[in-house]
Image (cartoon, rainbow, N blue to C red; front, side):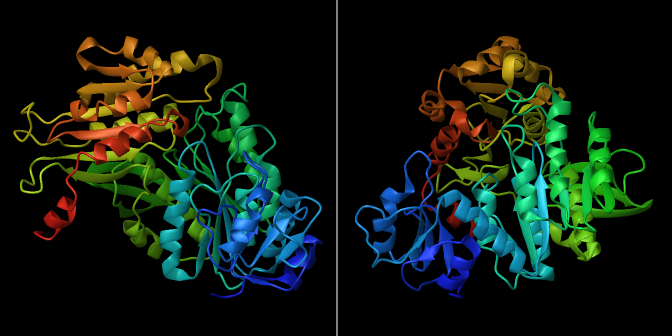
Length: 483
C-alpha cells in the first residue's frame, strides 16, 4: 500500500507530536474494520476511541491519533499526540486537501446526496483517478476523514456534505474548498431544526461559501426555493450552472420515462437535445444525473462521455437498488422483486420511491394470490418536526398510491398514514420494524414487486433483511447461470 501520511507529515499537518516514526497507508475510526497500516483516529462518540487504541495497534494500525496516552499504551507505542482529536483530524484533512492536485466536487441536498456522489464516482472513473467518501461520510468527522484519505495523485475528489442543524454545512465546505459544488434538491427534512423549506435552502446554499476562486455552483430549478439557491450561487460562484425541468435551465430535463429496470432521459443542453439512459428506474435519478453532467462540465471532464457512462452506475444498497429474491431454487418463477430503499426517507424521497414502485410491472399467475402486486413496506420518516403526523398522512394522497396494491407499515408515526389509506390498501401495521420483519413470509408473494423505505432510525432495514432470508441460498447464482 502506498504511504498516505508519514509521521513527519502528520506532525506538520496537525501540530502534534509523534512518539516514534510511522508511515500510515489509510485512516480508520473503527477497530472492527481497521486494516494493517491504518492511522487509527481515537474520536469520542458513544464510546471514547482512546479505549480502543491498544486493540487497534494489536490489529496492525500504523499509529493512533490521540489526545493522551491511552490505557494499555505507552510512549513506546506509535502515537500522534494532539491537543484535541477532532481538531487534529480537521487539520489533517485540511492538509490533505491542500497538497492534492484533484479537482474537488462537493455535493449536498435534502435527497440524493449519496446516490449522486456514487454516480460521480462511477462516471469520472473513466476520465481519471477518483477519490470519494465512503458510505455517508458527510458530517463533522466524515468530511475531514475523506479529505485526510485523499491521495495526492487523485484527479477528482467527491465530497458529500450533510447537516442536521443550522451552521453545519459552511465550515465543512470551507474545509473541502471545492472547485464545484452541487445542491441536488430541497425537500422537507430535518424540519425539527428549521422553520420551513426556505430555512433548509439557505443552510444548504452555504455550501457555496467554500468554493475556490473561479468555482462553479450547480443548482436545481423548478423548486419553490430555487430563487434562494440561485441567489446564493450568484453571490459566491464565478459561474452558475442550472439543471432541472424549468425553462432556461442549462441542463433541462424534458422527459424521464421508466422502461423496466431503466430510465430513458430526454434533455436539452443550451437548447440542443440529447438522450441518455440511467440503468435504474426513477425520475429523481434522471434529474440528479443531469446535475452530474453539469458537474462534469464544471471540473473539466467531458460531459458527452459522462452522459454515456451514467449507464454504468447502479444505486448502492439501501438507496433504491433492485434485486430479485428467489424462494425456490428449482422454480425461477417463485420469486419477487425487492427495492431496498431503507436508508433514508422524507416526503420527497418517499414520493420518488412510490413513483418507481408504481411504474414497476409485477408478474401474474406465479404466486398464491395469482395476481402480482405492488407492495409498499414503509417505516417512519424522522426529524419532520411538529407537522410529522400530517406529512405522514399526506403520503396517502400521492398520485403513485393509486397503482399500489397494499401498504404495510411500521412505527408510531406511520399510524397516521394507515388511518389515511383506503381500507383496501391497508396491510399490516406494527409498532416496530422488528415486529413487521417477523411477519415477512406473510407480507409478500411470488410475482410481487416490493418497496421497503423509511428513515434509517426506523430500522426498516430489518424488514429488508427478513425478506432477503426468504430467498433460497445459491438460487440467484443458479438462475443467472441459465441466462
